[in-house]
Image (tube, rainbow, N blue to C red; front, side, top):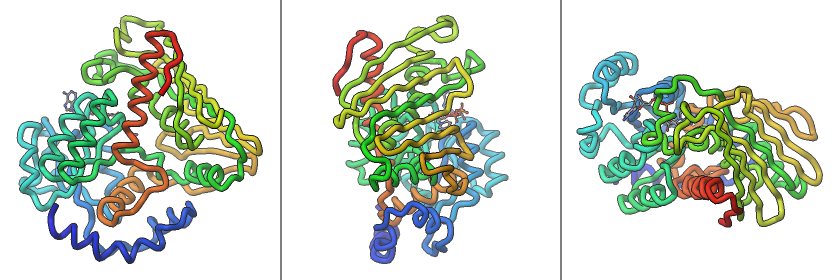
Length: 370
Ligand code: NAD
């Protein structure tokens, strides 16, 4: 770890610790938005210049604490375009063969891995071995075992591992979490998460088990899994699941089309969720509790997120998710900030364990205990 960052962490911690102790969501968001940040930004290289990488790069232009300083890609023409657009010097450009050399690049603090799911594990471990912080897209990997190895590698290298859970910084989501934590909803009884879309091009990597690690569950069902955990505020203790496949040509062996799954939580709360690549207009969360309810639709898209509770419409402002996420991740890495909902590798392993259990429950038809 370079001494600049150690120094920065030391001098900024005392100054930032107090305001960050509050759990007031509005204050948290305003602080990120309004408080001028005068330390050096987190300098980030994006690996994988595809659809989502492009969105993150654009959103980062509005960041106060994070800056795009490098790229890693297998396509030289894309690197050229990004260099021109984002003013990236040749010395900060890498391909998949030579990116271990970021090790010697003082312009890059962190690498954001935005490639097909099954590549994340090896790429994140290489980033860690190069001594750089890793930010990784969801799903962090394709099995819990792989996820644990990633966590270990980053620990060993003394770098942070964060996962692109952008909803963990979304103001309306955080308001519902605040209401739940403050007891305003009473005892939580039931969560429903419906996540899906009709997928197009049958040749894309998302429908290739080798690269995707599965189908809809890895890509979109994970939002219902992760959402059920932060909305209910507990970890599930059992899972049941049922798969339906209407198009076995498009959705081959190991590529799930539609899975319905259910969770039981220690308090007795239950969840019922749907993950699919074959239905549109499915982006909905519903939380029922003894003294109220919360519903969101859209619940996990790029926004604006819309929601209401028994107290009325949620009025928190729309923010560009990826801008806030990257500013908050910079604060986590540079200033030791603790997010309201964790975004670290251990958090991602919890989702992966549940995905493993869902696949096991589909196969066996039995309830799987976690
Ligand atoms: P994409 O297909 O648009 O981009 C993937 C990129 O990876 C491309 O630039 C491609 O060239 C590159 N790549 C490198 N090695 C490759 C290989 N062997 N095969 C295929 N492509 C390879 O995909 P995307 O939508 O940008 O998704 C990338 C990751 O981001 C996925 O893990 C996905 O789950 C995640 N994602 C997250 C969100 C979110 O909201 N957090 C949204 C979309 C995607």
